[in-house]
Image (cartoon, rainbow over all chains, first blue to last red; front, side):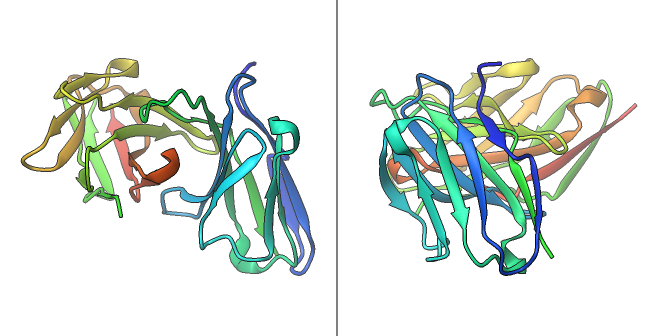
Amino acid sequence: DTGVSQDPRHKITKRGQNVTFRCDPISEHNRLYWYRQTLGQGPEFLTYFQNEAQLEKSRLLSDRFSAERPKGSFSTLEIQRTEQGDSAMYLCASSINSGSPLNEQFFGPGTRLTVL
Amino acid sequence: AQSVAQPEDQVNVAEGNPLTVKCTYSVSGNPYLFWYVQYPNRGLQFLLKYITGDNLVKGSYGFEAEFNKSQTSFHLKKPSALVSDSALYFCAVRDSGNKLVFGAGTILRVKS
């Protein structure tokens, strides 16, 4: 399967714990995006990378959230001191940056986080 | 800021009937619009995208979308619905940096 993969698929944690999610994009895609989706809502943008550079962060991304993309390949999203409000589906997507605004993003299956 | 609105939380159609899922947009500049579908416990799958100049866009699984600049709409359509089309549908618009801004989604239920 050459699609976007995410690990783990599900994570249950206790409030205050740290969690880390991983995303492996489609191999030739140089752009990688993180979104968060809560029940009954559409995905909301969190951050994106072009290669290893983090180019934009949403104001939704509090200082408890950090994302990295070392070497421009896989990416990790870490949430420190989790809160119940962090419970959501975290989606990763990748695309090619060819200069066209129309390159669609391909999404992974998501990581569902439940904070107890 | 770019935005889209999906005015219907849910659309119900009978199998074999045509379906329409509505989306309106608000953008500055040229609109770059997308439709995605989400099945339970799965990520989003790309259906189609708007390319400037083509008011009728054809996509995956027999879906198409009609772009209407005067009504700022980009409605998703299919001539004959299948039960397997039942899912959550999202309209999205490209914002700065190629990130997507999504609508709240519309649940499509196709009954046999």
